[in-house]
Length: 77
Image (cartoon, rainbow, N blue to C red; front, side):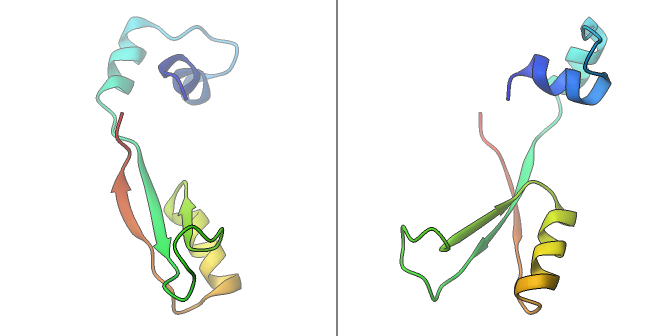
């Protein structure tokens, strides 16, 4: 996701982000939530689950693995 795409998602799809909005987004660190299924082999499609936010992780766990956990990691780049 580019900075402009992120800015449009946050500030409205029809608006061109202002310099102030771009500066605010540059300092924002993106994170994801990762769950490792140790019963699966490395490289298996179900070995890792990556969630965009905590709500998505919690919803998935409620429906699929109530005792599971995910850890939050910063996205590099």
